[in-house]
Image (cartoon, rainbow, N blue to C red; front, side, top):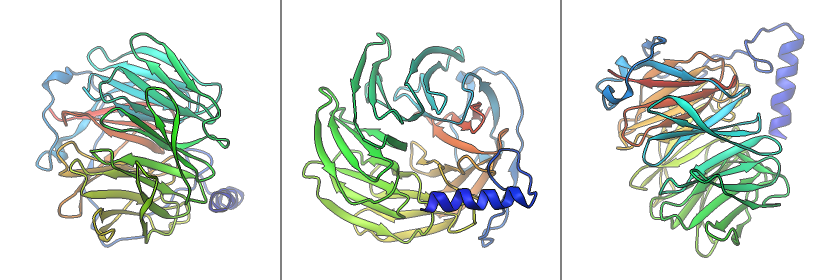
Length: 365
């Protein structure tokens, strides 16, 4: 229902002549003005040696610049780094999963679904990558061998955007569906282990906590749910966000959960932090002008939080001081909508992907 309202708003804007650089999607302004506008970090186009990058920190976020671009996808894309940081994985509604070597900045493999690819997740040892598609399948690929294991009819309504994660011990894969269904699978055999019922709208983000005992799920029903991964019992329901809740992510120590929300009408464009033990909201920060399909995650050391505004007309990456709960910097990207954002495991590189399929790499020299 909410997604239908989003498209109706877009149509109204189009009819009255509003212009946007990506259709559909009106240009919107931030409704929460409690945080002063940060200094915008300029974009530059350079080819540089990634091995000389500094670790990105709150002390040098004003020095972040564009390092390079990776071209291959033709439509909106998301992305994740491999656990060792040597490879960047990207996925797109163009139906492909692409792997990029970050030493040579070249594409090294391409895998295909029969329709849109909605999410990916690397195995903890980096030997495999799982992808979930609108074609209702989960596919697990051997990165070096290309060998494919397919879970057919994983979800009758297809996998939701960003709704896939792999537990850090390597034993479990979680997936979420466009109808609110969440499942946990045996990563080795592909057998369904647990089915989690509770959401009644698109699942838009999944995240295992560090020890794999808890799975967090975000949904367009505006709730976050915490699940016991062994029993399938619902531990808690986190509520408060009121419009198109998107991605969710645990902090490196598992004590805090981050979430992002907001729709194209300007409702509840916020980033929030939650205490996992109590289920209480810790802080709320002004977010993007729209966060439908937006991405959120912590830096490897947990000091920062980065987010993207999704496939509408925001075009920025936001970097927050996770402890202080304050906006630290904004990166202006080359696209009108930033769908995916990721932090390399060593903290030296940020990657972003747009609604035009372009991947940008960011760092500090």
